Image 1: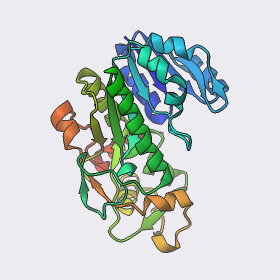
Image 2: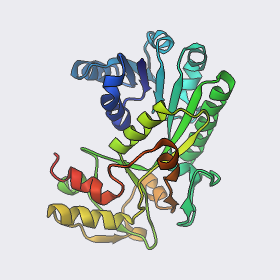
Image 3: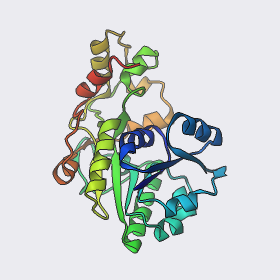
Image 4: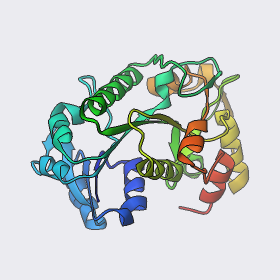
Length: 287
């Protein structure tokens, strides 16, 4: 079996490394040709450049020789870039499983209520609206071709090198307080576990929330990270006066508690890091 990953970012690279032994060949894209060369030298992956200013001519042939396709490249204002360029190649290929990485942001603001896959998607931000459109386009391709397309709606991703402990160490952490605000999170290794389980049990048209068991206030997670490591705790900052980018501020405009029951009941996923406590404990001694 061969794997192709569009968008070898934090999640895609972790998944490809975890899944490497399953595949004869792993091919993947990044937007920068120089980065593609560097990653190819560091790994056993065959790297391609794909983005607004790059489109490796080998990709079409790669897709014809692919069995499992993971799409982690984000959509743009014009829609999904992979479908825009390679929908026909994917449709004509032998690909049997397609995973599209989306976001729980498509649910919009639920006023702190519990949310599952049956909750109507009501995205508020422009970036979440284009995500929902991209989901629909991939599901339509699956329905038209008979390929097993699955959508994975991810919550806030953390893992080695990208977590609240790193932010504390680097002096980049802010302890933002907004009454009643909670977020779900997911360790990147649990994302990989979920994807591998779905590859073993494909269900065409499936949508899965990939998230931890315990939504928590952001300041609570920061406080736990500081207590766990002995690092200084930054002062509490009221959300209304916090210096946040427009994108960061928009995240606080959506409040929901997301359930993950379907990945457990249908795919048999047992999270290694069911809450931020287990996740941070595993990361506290890592660089």
